[in-house]
Amino acid sequence: MNPLKLGVIGLSSGNGHPYSWSAIFNGYDHVAMEDCGFPVIPRYLEQQQFPKDAIAEAAVTHVWAQDKGIAAHIAKAALIDHVVEHHTDMIGQVDGVLLARDDAETHYEFAAPFLKAGIPIYIDKPLALSVADAKQLVDMQQYPGQLFSCSALRYAKEFKLSESELAQLGRLRHIHATVPKDWDKYAVHVIEPLLMLAKERGTIVRTQAWRNKDATTLAVEYSEGLQVLVSTLGSSTVPLALRVMGDSGWKDLFFQDTYFAFKSTLFDFVQGIIRKDVRIKTELMFEVIELIEAGRKA
Image (cartoon, rainbow, N blue to C red):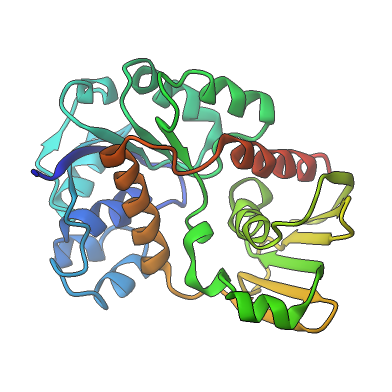
């Protein structure tokens, strides 16, 4: 089987995913990647061995960005063959699309043509900033599983607990999640993995959100007794972490391996294309967005 052809769409402010995601498939030019504007990217890429650590099942073959110079640099850094004039020029040329922009307000504009064309698309987190907007995108799917969207931290090995570890914690009572930067773009990084951990949470009973300067906190109470506190702490230096507390114990979980999380996410997206199945349930997508929306009311 020949590798799938993927197109990548970038670039939004503060988000280097067009560079890093493409490199995870293609490998990269070491000199050009140093000039990508995101110093952390070449540092974790240089810890990998290419092509061994790349995703062999697909390659990023096409790129578009709002500025052709940006697109050309992404192409040079991540070894992408084709820079297109308009993002819709990829239709008919690729098997899937990576919408690698995290400015949710642009997602409909960029995703709609591909959804209508039946092309699988991975939409960067957050899918939307309201459940209504998320449903508008999901409802455009031509078949179940066409739209893939999540935080890569859903796949982070640091946020996984074994059955024995969960048993040692006992029934989960409280999860406190912290992440730096702003609510709209970064709350999803801890909301999604905590929902993956708290499978017996039940339904939301109440929420309360508040804001202090550049920090936002959302408190959530669930029908099964679980209480959740999610804090985005703006410019403060804080870990991207979950503190998980149960009847019998507690455990701190700290995110560290960016490459593993990104690669695992992209690999799952590609497997969904190959197997033509649903990788992320829309119900969970909506629940994640529901909490993001609740926090925005602070």
